[in-house]
Image (cartoon, rainbow, N blue to C red):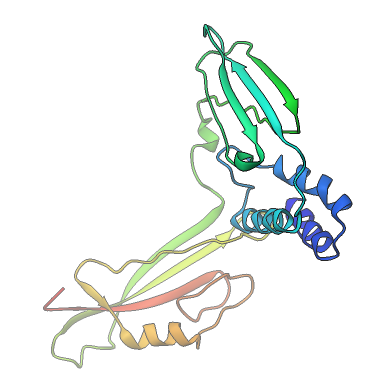
Length: 227
């Protein structure tokens, strides 16, 4: 568990147990996904925080002088790197389009981490070519409220109902609701949303209205003479 291990590293750093913290920090540094992240945003932030505090707490630097060469397929000469304490945190990368063997050589004193990533493209099966993790329905209905103002031609209520279909809770799901063309929002509705008077019910993550069950919320709008 990346998040739990990050908390453990923070605790070890706080207790100044550097011998125990070292292997934990090395394990965390090897768990990043392609692109540099660690899965979720929360996990990535925790790992960065834990590794940063570990680096600050580790005052004494071990000797590091490594000469690394990488010979890629069908290349006449290798790519060479000189890794020292002054540039140890700088990431180096190189790539090849050929799916063949390559050679890495390292000489000198110290330790380094090398990550090999293979990227390939596969056709998405038809059953996976759509997002079906959520149930979503949108209803638009006319309402009588608001027509007492002379510049309002039509008032509608938008009801958005959504439900996450997986067996675990959804994390950081965002529902982006835009107004219909030519309509402006009901400011009273927006004030209710901003102060949270509608709240939410059950497992609903966020609301724009005040309906229970699977309804995420409602948002009223008016159509006037100007957009």
